[in-house]
Amino acid sequence: MKIIYKTRFSYFGQSGWRSPAAADPQKLFEPARLDARLTMFRRYTLASLASQTDGDFHHVILSSSLMPERYKMLLRGVVRQALGARASVIFRPQGSAGRMFRRFVLNTYGDADQIVQVVLDDDDALSADFNKVLRYQARCVIEDEDNEDEATFLSFPRGYSLGLDQHSMPQWLAPRNVPYTNLGLAQISAPNYRKNPFMTAHRRIGERQAARVIAANRPFYLRAVHGHNDSRAIASDQRMAPHEVADLLVRFPFMAGLVGRENGRAATLERRAG
Image (cartoon, rainbow, N blue to C red; front, top):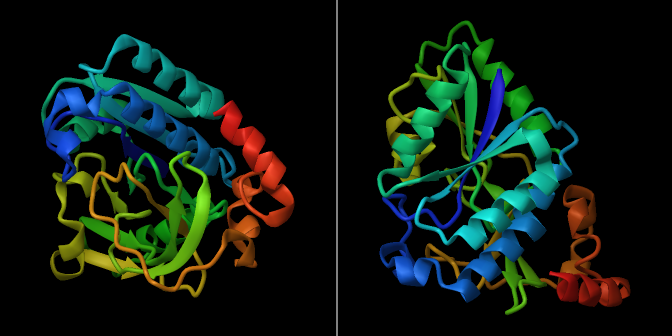
């Protein structure tokens, strides 16, 4: 069983994004925007995967063949530095993100019996034990002799919204509990199953697909909220300073240099380095 994390990074095509930049290449590849996206991607998304206690996974990042060459090189560089051979960066022309991912999976893992495909946006993060928990839950589905469904989704509804400032530094956290959220949404199926998470309306999964909600009373993800969100970001009014969340650094250890009263100097240095 192979676990594959899928990320769209400034892909120009059909991918479900709603921001003005999604329909305009000039806005999508504007240097200030790409610089901000790269900072968040490196600081949160890639850092959270690099900190996984179960490091057996593959991360595929889909971007646009129209991206300026300088940023293609920078993207490859930060991915290689964080994950090495556990990641692939692919650049594709305008089209359907879901179909681009499907072709990659079929070409790379077509001989596998069952695979797990996971949504991970380029500014979000997962808990350090997410891959470990996901593997256990996926095995439960695969080994269930009464399960006759071609595909089963796993949803991890609990996490935090993470408010970022203009420098992509943490400002606040708000509890989030949204069944069938895109955060960590996973599909278990054969590689040649006709759909993947990017070809499925995630808000309708509970009505249309076999699914299991992992409703543990603990956070599994950080959902970034900032000025460059590609989809509507709604956050609870119940907001806390990062250092007030007792288990934050236990679940998300890569945040250690970014939050906390005693880490103010470290956060400043990290921001300058980024």
